[in-house]
Image (cartoon, rainbow, N blue to C red; front, side):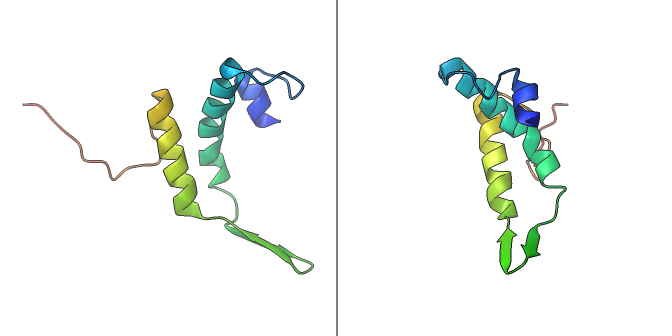
Length: 82
């Protein structure tokens, strides 16, 4: 729901290249909030966990692909000109 609102599409819209790119950008914008949630969830014999590094790698890939600022990667080398 949050990603549909962010990408300004409806869950009922037909998938096309434009929608795909907008959803992909919305996913990239959603991932930082996803990382604030629990990394492991268990209830009634069912458990689910996240591969946090995999999510961060996918986020970095999406940022690079769509020209977005990678807010999560603070280990990038910095270049300064003097």
